[in-house]
Image (cartoon, rainbow, N blue to C red):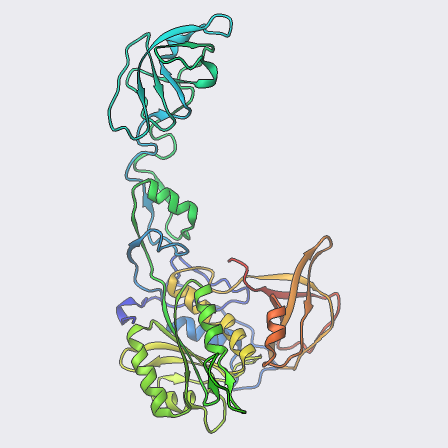
Length: 453
């Protein structure tokens, strides 16, 4: 559950056409930047919101969650909240880069295959032995990779350039001072700023942080997202189906999408169309929610329980948005906790597209990740597409890069219930509100799904 203290006081971003709002690196937007003017397509009727209008209201209504120290592996995929300054050198001490013998370079000057230099072996050092060692001039120590270089030595001769002797060793090569030695601090020096704030922590960053002794780092938490769907006809997969009941695919789909976005999903499942039941379930879930996402129940029907129940609270609005699929939408805050809630349509394709367009940016903003919206790419259209005037249409498509460049092929029909074609697609083709047709060979805007940001 997010408190008001977790929310930023600065203004939220505007939803730009390219999906990349201005940012200061932590997901917040400097208050000196006001909303940027935006063109409203003339074909959109009054009273209907643009996609950008609705997205902007959502992004203004959620904010980056308060950062805290967390285990470094748990922070995988999260942006570092502040610059990480190395607390120590890396390596921490001079050590051997090869298995061989630690010597002074001056003692093997002139050594060759024909005239090797013979030195007494006075000891053996292994990595992690915990015992400091020192040598005097004219001696050698057998040493293993990673072991601390003995005091007095400055060079490591690999076994391959010796006779591997135990009491005495014949060295057959003259090596320069420092050969095969990893010097203290040659990788990272104490006090260096090695990972800047805003860097998304990946396996490589985890390796560096752990190697520098950072078992915990400061990052924003993963939002806890409660997912529930509504409808008396819905059943949990595996349950008995009546002649007019269906499996609840939406809550599973949306929970999976939440997890894919890097957040924590709590799938509640299907809730009946009874307002009291819906309100009770919703209230019970808020204790573990930074965000609630619902599907279904927000249209114009008599049993649209989400719209009926939340409209009575006066803190959730249900605008019509100029898009297809996904025209009915909703956003606001609920109950005493003032938890943000995003309500999505019930048809599965509508719910999925709406998640991609509205919920994913909200989750990324809460995590402090930028950009909020998936970047768009351009591709050549492989078939004609028609679209209704006044709506931004998101057409399912298959995107691929060939030897001729990027192309995208429309997949399936326009029905918002057609899950099969949604699975066959890997992209959404964007048709503008003022466009009624795109033709074979046109260059179009495409959201490539499942591609890393």
